[in-house]
Image (spheres, one colour):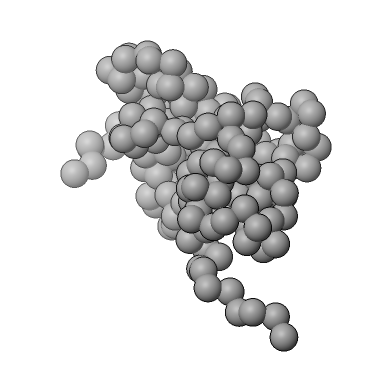
Length: 206
């Protein structure tokens, strides 16, 4: 009879995510994963597979949580949709700089490192970007319904632009660009959206 597992799979996955975010794919060995998770190589291999299998499972877990976080930031009623978009845009630099380890987006990191050579990882990365864009589109559409964004604006293009801006902020923050400059750019980007006169003339919200 198989021996029962003596570890929590979620804890192991979280540790693997952290290790890959810190070291990258090429810079992470099975021994590194073993040390990070506390599992011996034999137990790690028996339960999760080789390094690439662990990586895909870790990336899948990161994607799952990233989508949970994205929905938490952007889902909600129409009357506050524009505020949620504003928060999303100005959070780009903070996602890196408010993290003590400055990891940034795992999907963005591996889009650069492995997407050209690892089709399984590429599919996961494209999937999370596509789903985040859809969540942004839903929020943009809600802001249009409420009259805060121009009804004739291309929502798909706006959602893609906002996501691209967020990912770019992540990269620039990791590259050492000053937070003040990034925050100012984010505010400028928000003001550059097709905000309606009704929104612009509205008293500042508390």
